[in-house]
Amino acid sequence: MPSSKPITIMIVEDNKLNMLAMKLRLEQIALFHLIGEACDGQQAVARSAELCPDVILMDVGLPVLNGIEACRQIKGRNPTSRIVMLTFNDEPRTLEACLAAGADSYCSKDIDNDALVKAIQEAAALPD
Image 1 (tube, rainbow, N blue to C red):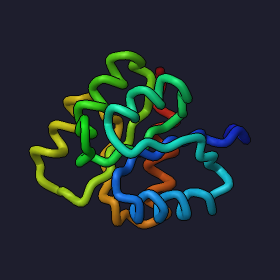
Image 2: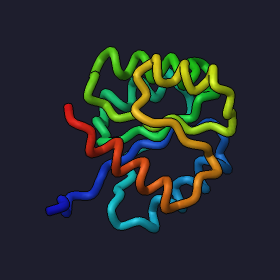
Image 3: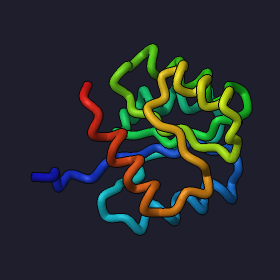
Image 4: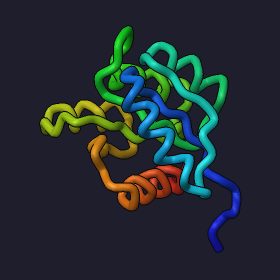
């Protein structure tokens, strides 16, 4: 039986318009509860430790500390953190770098809502 507890999410995105669009998309889904946001990789590392979200949606191309390195640091501190990387970059090298850093999933930023919901649910359901 599925849990009725919402999946807590933190969004990490430096582009304000993309951040707003992602928040508006996710706020419409009762399964999810947005608990925080960050606008660079360094802030993502700090906020994730503070907030302990179920899933982190993280942009690859972030200032200060890129998303791949932020993912590596977050996973190093808390291996059970679930991270879905988001990008418009579909280069195989980028995907490989994300997965090597410990990302649980990788999606295009223009993913449709159903696929995004599925990616978040699958990441949240991964065993510890």
